[in-house]
Image (cartoon, rainbow over all chains, first blue to last red; front, side, top):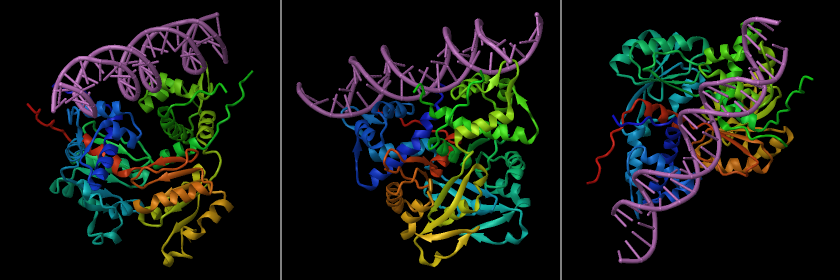
Length: 214
Length: 214
DNA sequence: TAGATTGTTAATCGATTAACAATC
DNA sequence: TAGATTGTTAATCGATTAACAATC
C-alpha cells in the first residue's frame, strides 16, 4: 500500500544494470560498489543507489552489493526469473527473424507463430509451429500465452490486437508503426524502428530554422 | 550561437508528431490547432507548443498550424527530407529482415549488406548486393555511406564499429545487445530488443520485496 | 575501532503544465 | 472588431545529483 509508482526512467535503466551485472558474474566478480558500477556504466553512483532503493535495500554499508544477489533481485523485479509464454503474430521477415532469435534465456518462450497464408500451415521455424489465425483464441487460452509479438502489416495489426485483448493476453510487443488502441489492462510496449532511425537521423542533421516572416 | 540544446525527450516525440501529421495530410486535413492535436495524440497542447517552439514559430495565432508546412518542417528537423545512404553489417536473420524493409520513403537508402560468409558473395536481397567485409572501407568512402546498421553477433560488433568509425561513418544503428565504444563524433542509436522485452515483462510482473534482514 | 559505502534526506536541475499577453 | 489560438513566461512537478548520517 505504501508502494510508490516507479517512474519509466527507472524501469528503462534496470535492464542495463541487469546486463552489466550478468557480465560481471560471468567474469567472476563477487561484489561491486555503486561507485565502481558508476564508472563502468557512465551513470552517477547516486542514481544507481536511488534506483535500487525504489525496490529495496540490496546493499550493505561499507561493503557494497553482492553481484549475484543483486542480479537475481533485478531479475525478479523485471520478471525474467519466470517463464513467459509468447506467440508471434505475422510470419513475415520480421516475425521470422524474431522467431529465430532465442529469448528463452530470459524466460520468454515462443510457442507458436500465427499467419494467414495457408501455404505456411503445418510448417515450423526452429521447431516453433506456424499456425493459422483462426486457431488464435483457442491457442492463447489453452497455452496461457502472456505476450503477443505483433509483426503484421499496419493495416491488420489493430484487429489482431483487439482479438488478443479479448482472449486475455497480458501484453503486446508491437513492431507495427502505429499506436494501438486496447483496454488499459493490456500492456503495450512499442518498438517503432522508423522512429528510432529518425532520432538517429536528427542527430546527424543540422536544421536551419525558416526565415522569420517579417 | 543562441542555440539551446534540445532535450532527448523532445527529439523522441518528433517522429510521432511527424507520423500523425502525415496521416492527417493523407486524410486531406489542412490545418490543426495544438488543442486538436493534443486530443488525438494524448499529449498536452502546451507540450506540443513548447516542443515546436524549440525550433521555430510554425503556427499562427487564431489559426493554428498548417499541416503540410508543419509536416515539412518537422521532416527537415529530423533530416528525412534528404537521402541517407545506409549499409547493413551482418546478413543474418535480422539484417535480412531489415534489408527487406523499405526505409526509403524517409530517405534511408540501403546500398549494400556486408557479411563474412563467402557463399553469400555475389548474392542480393531486394536488389541490394551482399558484399564481403574486406570491401567495407572502400565502399563506405566511395558511396559516402552515412549510416551503418549493426546486426552482427555481439562478439563481432565492436570491431566492426571501430572500423566504420575509422572510415568516417556518421552514425551506427546498433541492434547488438552491447554498448559500443566509438569516438564521440560518431552517433550511436541503440535498439536493444531484449531491454524492450524486459520493460514489457516488468509491467506484467509484481515484484515482492525481499524480507528485511532483521 | 576505523574506513568504506550504503540508504536516505535535501538541494538542484530540468521538463512539463498552466496561464496569459500578443496577434492573427 | 471579436474570437481563436499561438508563443512565451511563470509555476509546478518530477527526476537527478549532492551530501551526510547510519551502519556494516
